[in-house]
Image (cartoon, rainbow, N blue to C red; front, side, top):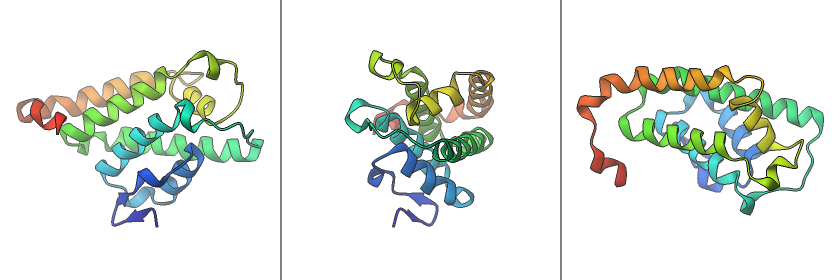
Length: 153
């Protein structure tokens, strides 16, 4: 079981498609910590270690695009409820996902990594502004409570 009381056991996910599917199916119950962990795991799964050569059918691509887009939108809406640790972890993970663009992945015109980059950077680049604005809005009330040491623990 990958989900219990709003907590998503992201370490079990072996693909972006699997992570997106499980998280989307439990979207209503996810806590800020689970959303943050989801994006951290996604950033890890974009690495070459988890790279898959499987070409997704158009139907699977569309479904995953819908799942990831919904998860991203929910994260943006919920980021105001994140604590400092979850907020910083989420920002870092989304930045890593946005910046993942090495030669190996540039050659690809399909797949999960391309779908993620398209959602965050591509034709919908207004998402970058949404990320920055939502994080800025959520950060201001947290500045007085910010514990730098807490980030390293």
